Amino acid sequence: MRLVQKSILALVGVLVLAQGCVEKEQGMTRSQRQQLEQYISTEPTSPQHPLDISFEDKIRLIGYDLSPNEERFAPGATFTVTWHWKVERAVDENWNLFTHVIENGGQRNEDGNGEVRSLYGPGQWNEGEYIRDPQQITVGDNTRGSLQFFMGIWRGNERMRVVSGDSDNENRARALNIPIVRGAARPEPELPSLEARPAEGLTIDGQLNEAAWDRAQVTDAFVNTMTGGNAPFSVTARTLWDRENFYVAFTVADTFLKANHEEQDDHLWEEDCVEIMVDPDGDGRNYFELQVSPRNVSFDTRYDRRRVPQPIGHADWDSNLRSGVHLRGSIDDEGNDSGYDVEIAIPWTAFNAGQPPASPPSNGDTWRVNFYVMDSQEEGQRACGWSAPRVGDFHVPARFGRIQFVGPVAIEQAAEPASEEAEGAAGESAEAAGRLPVAPGGSSVQGAPTTVISPGVVMPANLRAQVRGEDSERTQAAIERAEERNRQQGENDTVLEPEEAAALRQ
Image (cartoon, rainbow, N blue to C red; front, side):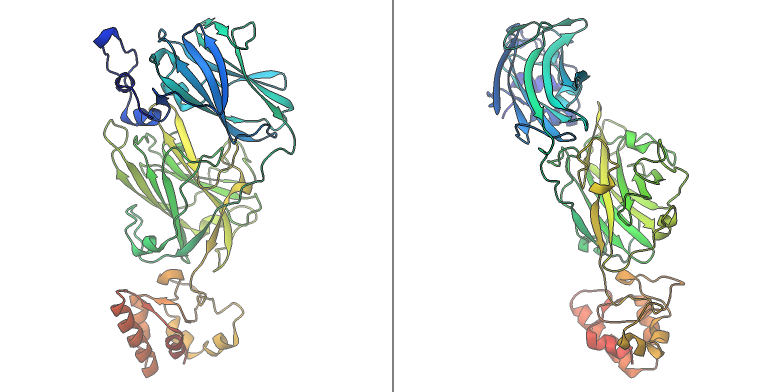
């Protein structure tokens, strides 16, 4: 759908006097214009559910869409209703839309709900335009009977008169009535899952230019937190792990970078930030919240259970996270921005707090985690997430996604029950291989228990050098074969094949 020239000029905020037309809109940013383009057209729109309600023969409500397009909804359900407006004559400034929702006999106002409402009201519309006006609506958990929608246009103490179509005696159009029926909700969507793969050679600077990040699995694009549909901006995340840390990286598209907070544990969620929620055992108790802003300021807190204690959990908890941010633009100015990347290292010791405390994961373990991004606009704020909670609250542990920790299965602590083969390696090979224990991905962990080398272990250079110093000719020959193979494949570290690992256990 294309915009008429007048609409484009209106969104830029330029006053046009040509052909007797005076554009009334205030100036808007480039990002706001981009947001609105999808909602404004000079071509007639085709709503799923047609209406014909006229407000003083100036603005006409011609119908609405529902997503999902259901006849009824259940308590707690979230849906999007998109109103279709036709501008027959331009109106004076300061006119606004209202949406009154009648629920359980009471009224709640959804007047400012939606991007169109906050950026481009009827007082700015131009003759000949068709406006799509989406609003996300959540049915109350205790709602009975139906939701009734009354629509109108207001300014100060007056309302624009409804001159045709169904209405009440208060100049409110009866636009929609949705039955609320228990058991009508759709099946709960599946939770997303992601592998956390081994980390190696990371510098926590936000650049994300290490090979480990290239090998990391990437989430699908983040979604609308209420509906699970497409988010209005692009975000993906990746995860890695080793014996010391859980690593998370975000790549965020953002055309307006805003982050005024400068102190640790400031309320970062009020502006741009990325957010991680971690429930190690997935029971909804003792979960953790961590945030980082484009200014590389962090916030962290811990909850005993959903939003307990109020208002922001145990904010005295300190995760000791490390983070780095790479900006594609500049913060808090009118310059052109395209986004930012965040790289976060969270030590496993952070999750020892609370009851029950969490131990670091082992290969194959699954933790419950969710990711969110808050995005401030010049007017208002929006959000997206990895796994949609589908209610107006991010604190829904039951909707957290699943992170599975994967890596070389051979990285086992000797103190754990060992296989017969591993027991045979516990002598001389443990002495040789255990001087610098190998963590997933090949990072060395000082002071960790002795490990046993087995197939698939990645040997970093420092451990290679120490093992090379052993007197075993078979050891040296095994490493030399692995190094030559990996040189040919362009690898920096030495990945051991089964027979090579066996040589190191002799």
